[in-house]
Length: 76
Image (cartoon, rainbow, N blue to C red; front, side):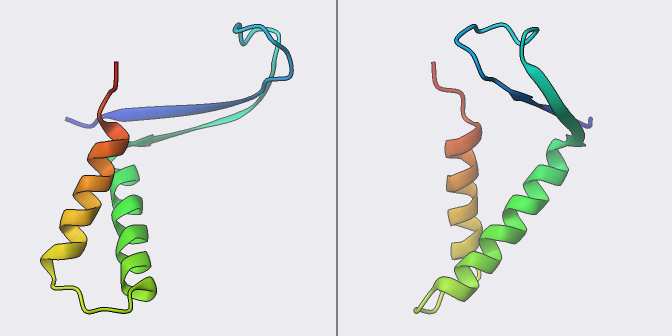
């Protein structure tokens, strides 16, 4: 099952919560797998270039999982 996502960007320049009176700038569609792959690639590169210490092969995956779960877990 593919989880489709759509991101819409608006120029919100007033105090109302309705988007009908704001300028639509554009949108994009992708799927959750594409977002995940981009995030994992970015975090892996960041960890490999910014780290001054050796990471075992499991550590980047664990850190990526923790980060992603903190972002995508709904907070009510």
